[in-house]
Image 1 (spheres, rainbow, N blue to C red):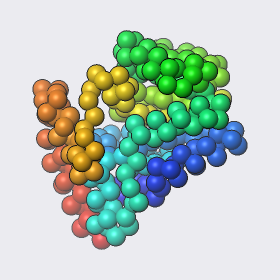
Image 2 (image 1 turned 180 degrees about the vertical axis):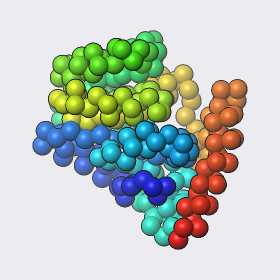
Image 3 (image 1 turned 90 degrees about the vertical axis):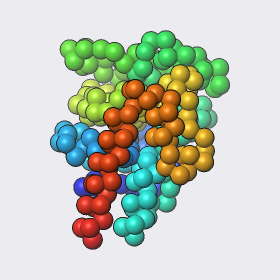
Length: 240
C-alpha cells in the first residue's frame, strides 16, 4: 500500500514477533504508518526509505485499514503505537527485559519513567533522555543508549526525525533488540495530551479529537493533510 509493505499482524501477533526476536537476540526496527505519515512519505524520500527498511510495519491509522479493505487485501486490525508500547512494557516486566525512553521534554520523560517504575518496577528502566538535542549529539546519544543495556528503545520524537535517527544509528545501537518510534505517546501517558475515546478511535476520528484539543497547532496537519491523504488513497485504489 502506498509503495510500502505493511505487515498483516494483530497487536498480539506483533508483540509475539517482537518477543521472539528479543529471545533470539536479534535486532528489529518497528515502525507504523497512518494517514499523516503516508502524506509525509510522498514528499520525503528519506523518510519513505527508512520506513520500508523497518523489520515490522504496522498500520497505526484506521484510514489505512479502510483502504486495505477497499483494496481487498484487508489488514486484520489497526495496531496503535501507544497500545503496542503498553503491551511491550507489560512484557518487559514479565520477561525481565529493560527499556530506554528517548523523547519529549525532560519533565514529561521523567514522569513517564516514574509512572512505569511504579506500575511495574524500576528494574525495567535502563535509562531515559529528553528529545531535544543537536545533530552533533546524536551519535553519542546512540552510544549511550547502546551502553545502557536496554532491550527495548522507545523514541517519542515526531516524524521524520525519529525514523531518521533510528535508521541512521541502528548499528551504533547493536545491543538493543527493539528500536521503536512512538510519536507523541509520552505526552498521552502523562496526561499532557488526552487520547480520543474508543469509539472515535474505532471510527478513524482521533485526528478530529486532537484537532479540537490543539486547533492552532494541528489544523494544517489534519485538515490539509487529510485532503492530501484522500487524494493519495484514490490514486492507490485506481491502480487496481
